[in-house]
Each structure stands twice: as C-alpha cells, then as structure tokens.
Length: 380
Image (cartoon, rainbow, N blue to C red; front, side):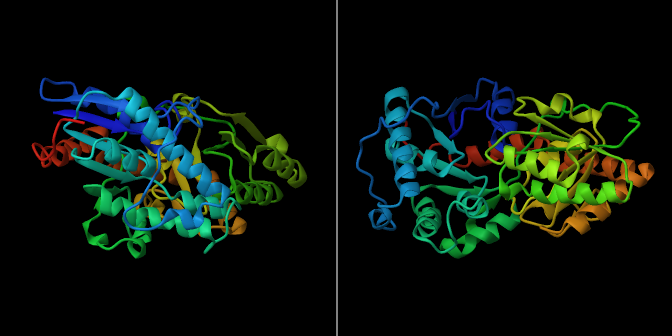
C-alpha cells in the first residue's frame, strides 16, 4: 500500500506531529507498505496562483482580512508545490493540517484523504491576541472544519476534548475518530539522578497561549515562600523578550534559564525533575507525554486534552488556568516531597508507555489504512 503523510511544517519542526510521523516510517518498512512524508518548505512563498473555491462556504466574503489572505495564499502555495513535486499515485493520503488535506484532495480527487486535526489555529490566534472571538477571521477559520468534513474521507483528532470543541462546527461529530499521537520510547530514556535543587522545566513555543507569564508569577510566589527551584525554559517565540523582562521585574530572572529553540529537548529532559506547562488551551499536549516518558513529574492546567493524560493526584497535578497561586501550591507540593514527586513520575511514565506508544499508534493506523484499501484510484 502506497501511503503519503502530508504535513504542513517540515518534520524537523517541534510539535506533536514531528514527535510521531518521521518515526513511523520504520514501523511501515515492509513489502506491504511504502510511506513517504511531504511538507511545504519555508522558502515557498507567493508561488500559487490557482483560484480556490470551497464547497461549503464562500470564503471571498472574508477576503479583505490579512490573516485570511495569508491563509489562502499558503493554501495556493501548498497546492502549487504538491502539483510540482508529486507525480506518482498513492493508495491513501493522511494529512496533518487542514491546508494539506484540502490541497491534497484537490490534487488527488480520487484518492482517499484522511485528516488528523492536531490543534486549533483560531483558538491560538485568539489567545495570542491576533484576532477577536467572533471576528470575520474567526468565522472563516471555524468554517474550515465543515469544509474538511465535506471534502475528506475521515476526520481524526487527538483528544475527546478537541472532538467536543469541533462538534458545533460540523454535521457529524460522532464520526470523528479519536487517536492520540504515539511516541517512540527509544527517544525518551529516564536517567537516575539526584539534583541538589529541584529542577523545573517547560518546553513550548513562547506565546501567550502557553501561559508562561502565569508560570513566572507562580515562581515569584515560590521564591517568597523560600521554596528552592531552578526553572529551565526551552523554546522560542514572539513572547521571549516580554517573558525575560517579566522574570526580571518579578525577581526570578536569576532562577530562570532561557535556552531558546532546541531541536531535541528529549536528550536532556530526563535530567530535570518536574515538567510544568500552564497552558490556556491544548488540543492534546504532546509534550506532557514526552515528559512522562522521561519520568518527570507533571504539572499542567485542566484545559483541552491535558486532563485526558493527567489524573490529578495519580500521575500528575492539575490546576486551573490563569491561577498563579494554585500553580505555586502544586509546584511547592512536588518540590517539597521527593517521594511523592517520584511516585507521580513513575505512574505517569507507565501510563504514557501503555497509552501513547508508537507501536500502539502504528497498529491503529495500519488497521485504519487497510479499511480504505482499494477504494481510490491510483491516478492523478
């Protein structure tokens, strides 16, 4: 069976998709399977000129909005690159971004296209202050879900919480399949260690949606309570300078290390003690599973798919979003009780191995792919 995994970002970019798709190829390396990975290079900008028509709504009513213009031009660029680079037929295409799915279905109309929706672009834009809820840009992006439902052969998402989020914007939410990402355990190796000071760490893009301002405020409370810690912030983004200034203003800059972007944080993640990410929204939160596989204690917020990974008090701690005091209390609890911290980490690691293994994901995907075998044409 000839498969195409259609990504948006190149596979070396951070995120849940990159945690799984490049590593799947080994699981599909047999005479029965042939898998390729495709994405849009960053250098491709402004190449596409094709007129775009959606089946379920008229996108041109939003055409004067810069964000919509950028989205549609990216769609045209992806379609242009697809037609230029992909000349051979496929039995099935699995897309991991709405633009990828719509472009692939346009280029390969007779080939089954499955779409996994990993996150909410419109929610991120709202939380990051780029658009307002209910704005034309918001309505445009929400309309894309119905277009995906109409055009693709199957919608998949990574958590029950995100299925519920999508439900008002499509016709048949009950048909969405839930399939969390899988992670190759060989990339995440717990390392026995004993740090003199508890080491907190977070890995994310530095944007308001991730709530790192709340984390720094919680760290300031820890400092007031004489609760020892070091915070490691791994990642980059538009909020970095603002967060560094906030750390200085709060008096926690000397306790905080900003690393910037790191390609393989899993290589040194096991040497820390506690993973914390106070997100304001998460479709799933892949980095929690990655931290669990490194045997770190988990502290997160009760948003999106995070509570589907973390059972409060069993394999981690959950706090409300935008609550620095509650976050500080949770961190103080795991900082001050190493035995409890280890028990949470051990339980989280066991759950991640059983629920989010790459082998589990590969088996589920193979079954799903085979159910479409012979349904499409292998011609452009």
